[in-house]
Image (cartoon, rainbow, N blue to C red; front, side, top):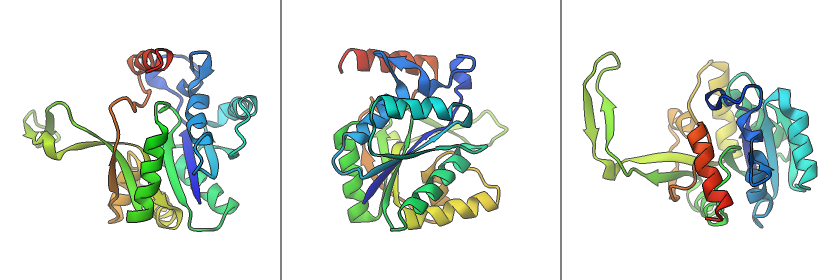
Length: 232
């Protein structure tokens, strides 16, 4: 079975929308979180969805689920103090719901431009390789800082570089123990791929196009509006 774990725990400080988390901003008359959930709701190979939401907006998220009749949503659970803890809470809830070693597609609630084909390719990659990470090619020069305190940078071969995006997909019996261990050790990673890599587990790359953006800043929001409202 395949489950989506949609993380919507951020509060959007970089968006400057005061108390409104970015996942509740609207595009084309609908919230970003609803647009994201819908992509997994409508996919035939997704069996269930767990949404992890910032605790102050749990009721608003549940209202979105009811309003849009997202029948595959199993639960909306409150997030933790960090993104990593929030994902851990979602994984725990999924394991409680179904104890099997299912595939879990971990996705950002503010990444609504995912398409059906990308979900399918990730599911197939997990079947064949055991895990997957969505990637996008580097179109510009990537600079690596040689020393954290120094000004010197090294230009990397962008043909050998990729940017990790979402979904990032694993078998739950592989990812949950690593997440638990990191949480107990008070270790924080930028995403699930980095977490799993720290445990010696890499993932098979699944390439997506550059439109699969994460809405983090106001310029991201404007770009997503153009793409979605323009029907691109």
